[in-house]
Length: 151
Image (tube, rainbow, N blue to C red; front, side, top):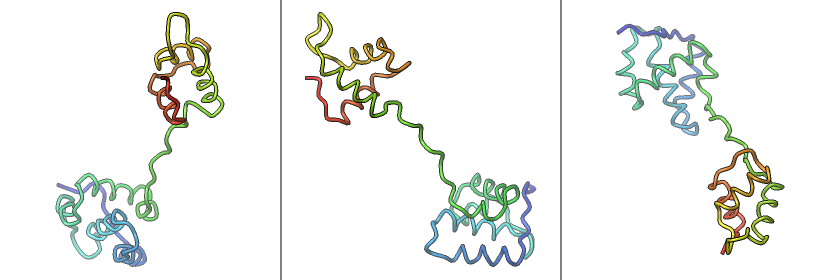
């Protein structure tokens, strides 16, 4: 199988990659990427197949493919840096809204009910248009976070 991404490293790049691969203070992921780039280099001769690189570096063949693709499309610095995952979604319930929900839970329950339930609080929150949509789990976790018991 012909490799889609052909890697030809310059002497400076090769030196930088070798330093990265031998540095034990850097994470294993980055060192494995550096080893993949060294194995994929065309300068010393014909590079080994990607499946063999994967076995040698103890990674999947997809990791080898993505590393080579990153190098050819985005460059060496992008390939050898730790990729952060995207940030999580912001919380749905802020402090102000949280206070309103807890205050609502402290009031008298609706007629016909002895106490507030998570389901009733969710319905009332939607009726009062505090939020457009909210799940019971969101209300439950909000109350639990403040150690508020409905009993």
